[in-house]
Image (tube, rainbow, N blue to C red):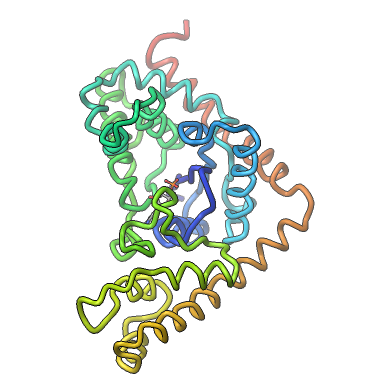
Length: 313
Ligand code: AMP
């Protein structure tokens, strides 16, 4: 069986951009691949510096994974901070990586462009992500377009390590679906927690109404493109063609139709989430099980890496 690894940073509520861009592929592929799904909590430390909030976000991410249908009996669901090899390998990668190379990373350039002081953690983010990936020898890493460069960093780093020390790492491929590579938000830009333009994946009916009604209605043509671009996540182009023809120019009616479609899609997810939340401490159980499995894989790889670099005598 081929292998797959991916993850989500627990930095806020998941939105439909995360779902269609990445998480849906996790669910679709869990029967075909040997899967490792990570809660990337150490990456979140670059954004969240509050203990309680961090704990809640980690919990929320695991419950979300389960609610969308990830199965801890089929896939390894684990927390990055539970596996020390991630930070250890990131350090080894730091020693073979140059500053100019990391300065080309989009995440670093964006943070710098905002005029903020950039933390070493943000600067170094691609090396921790390279370690996250390469410890598990995945063939594919399903992600949205915004993570493509980071998977390339992981590949480059694997190549560099292999060249210096010998063949330790497999080169992974990013798995990006063209149609949903960049899911747009309510303002037409990429849907993102940091832009405040999201439709949460487990939104209540009221939240869906509020988000959809706030979609910016660009009146450049007959069709409100920002409404349409979100709508096409839920219906086929043929279905939408009839609907948009029938309601040409009636933006309110089209938004109401979108509210119904989003709610129909989200309602079972909300119900599943409520069911999981009522089942006691499922999160601790899932993470304890995942920790054992992930640790076995990552430690075996890390032991080889230590031998390759010559620190085991
Ligand atoms: P993150 O919050 O960065 O951990 O994102 C989790 C996954 O969702 C990553 O694979 C991202 O590439 C993906 N993602 C986030 N926002 C979007 C979006 N607007 N469209 C498509 N994929 C996205």
